[in-house]
Length: 333
Image 1 (cartoon, rainbow, N blue to C red):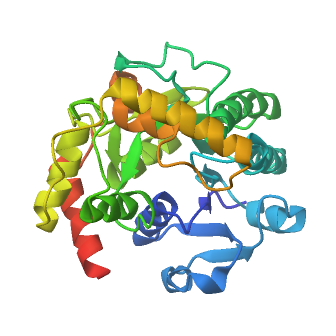
Image 2 (cartoon, rainbow, N blue to C red):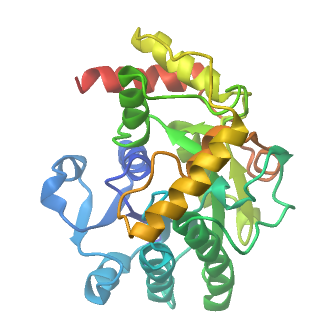
């Protein structure tokens, strides 16, 4: 029997999945992907990726996708800061369950599950590390489902004999981001963007190239099995530094330093969410508690464990990552 590696990537059409697939294919690795609509992403065929049409609820497609696979990288997830928790659980928890059960009895040598630094408590963080346990309950459906999926990954992976590692990236930026940074730019250019507080609070960001480097290390290191790792760029980057660097590189006017005071922002988020839930609104209010957490709190996390255990040293600086991000944005205009 051949010991050649075969990689399965879920969420391959997302920013992380695409960067990872391109990285592996450049090295000549065999890559499979479970994709709902392969024809909508013609670049997959150009890369020579073996696409199986379906999703994590389709047992036949899932079985076909896992067949012959040695390494699984699970990046697929439903993201957002608004909506019923059940909708997030269906993808982020139940989907993971289907995938792990499908791996039972196979020849999986490593399974990497992509979680999030958002699983930590909604408070200021100063070099918080993996010894701090995330709370069981969270304010939004996405984060709640990510906490539950992380616990499921570690417990079910162990019981099924699937060697599994969890990585917790911060805010991911880079080429092929079609949502977060583009939406941020739209708000900046329209004048709608406001800092919450001073804007000097830490942003737990990570360039997609650094994240993929960390994932690749987690696929290799035997000591990574059963462990959880925080991953960031490892630099001090404030909300204001991120926004102003983006504006400077794109040569657009940066937003005013005058921000919304945090006490006011908390009231706005609480009242807005209460009203929108009462009305049964499908779309979120202007300011949610999740956005308040992301933009208003100090989010500084330690990556010392990843450095020590994985040998993780981010290959791209923040400025290099932003250069690649801006180059891609410019190429899409």
